[in-house]
Length: 192
Image (tube, rainbow, N blue to C red):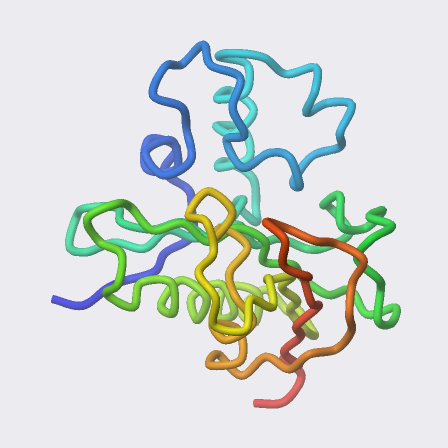
């Protein structure tokens, strides 16, 4: 059985991938880029999970999930850039005025890493955006030039991952993560 990527409409599966071990913990829940910083800072404990539950019920939901059979094994956050903090981010430039989508977080569950799931997730995120009319999709991975990236910072992906998915470097950014520069990678979805 292969990996299947589906829209992230099942809150419990999203929580498995990006939620805290304790519901009262104030961790990311993949909200830091998805909602405004004021709301992100105001949401604490279980309120963070409830906000994600609301996002899972919206159209479009907050991303895609990868499944191996019935088991959730991966997550990718993907949404119109206009609805994310990337719309206002001073360190990541806007290449043009297209209503592009952004993919900014790719996570694979421990025990499933090294199986190509991140590639499946990125392909699924591209398909998700394409099906919803996105003219292009961007990512902001690190340009680590083959060096090891700390697992806690690897969520943005690597330039190589995006290149293998057909993305091309569109711009440098002023953002640095784990000592590596981030680059703006873009895939035009208007063709085919």
